[in-house]
Image (tube, rainbow, N blue to C red; front, side, top):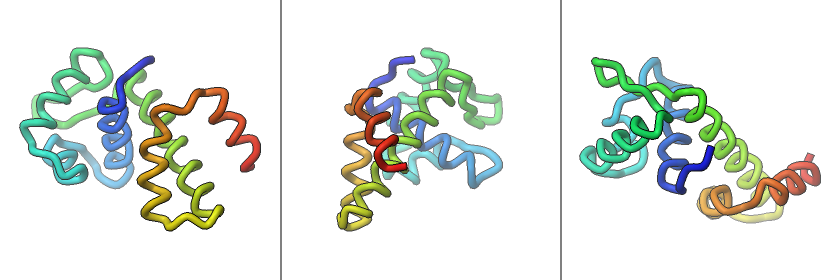
Length: 119
């Protein structure tokens, strides 16, 4: 289930977008992340090759089971870490940006300890 930070960010973005839209396309991802569509297309090709996403003939992007597992893990980390930092008094924008960095490098053990402590 290993993916690099960039792949994890793309998968998380697909998950988040899919919660508020009927379909997700490369252009939606590019807009959300502020990236060029060509960069997103290259990333989507890699995610497809690694079987983390499927793309319909219409260009709609769907997470596979492995892609969804990674995306949900990263998104859970992001939500918990950012809300925790906010409760510690960190500005919400800074907390979100820091959570985005931390979510990719924190060990499962450390995250579970924080999660247990916070809840």
